[in-house]
Length: 351
Ligand code: IPM
Ligand code: MN
Image (tube, rainbow, N blue to C red; front, side, top):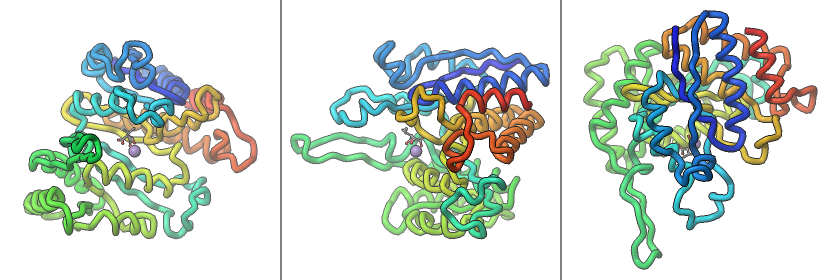
């Protein structure tokens, strides 16, 4: 099969982890006779430096015309401490999500048998966790009306949701639940927020179309607690943009490392695959970052393209590297560790 994949390395450790995913994908392609045409494009701080904006039109053209987008990371510390910065790398990611219509962010949380004891949470609580957080990605407080008033002394960001935005996300959640254990949890703050009440009303109205799915409604604050107390109580979670942002970082603790968790962002046409971690600027250029989250994101890409065998082989080689201790320093417990590029080479040669 011929695949055109837009390659957005981005900032910080982005280029290093993307390089390893490319090695693994190329090895898979070779083995299965696929032809991957990588289309590199600029984004984030790297794009601001080159052309003055974080998601240039040219990058959008490349992404919109690709079969999928593989993305590294975005963000640079020089913007974080400068509240007056007019353009920020993160705006590139938000613009990309919006322009590509990526309204659903799929963030699975699972454990790796060889890493259970890496998590600060107790083994019996997390072993066997297998849940998906489906985060709304192009609406809510991230995209609502915002600004300053009172001469700059009052700032506001508005959480707005339209029924159709909730419906299309919830539909993905119900469909996903049908293929899994038929449990769906809608996470909101309906005891306080009007937009959350619209979420509940909308999801409740859809229940009749999915009589087999058991739907529960829980408040975000309670879920923040229960998610790490008893993650096995959840299967598919649907939630608003900001709530999902927070819950998915929290959920990564279950797996033991942020460096392991992949994600996909899907909408109508092209989908995007990225690790959930950030640009980790302290490690940039040092060849020490964990590439596995990006490699596993590439596995999600193959899965979505109905190349199940290819996806499975990628997951298998990742598990093998973990089991055999062929890992970067974050997972080595002070023992022998390998460089980012060495892990990538090892994975590719074991495909
Ligand atoms: C994420 C990130 C982004 C978000 C940032 C970088 C804008 O934290 O993908 O979770 O908040 O969505
Ligand atoms: Mn986040």
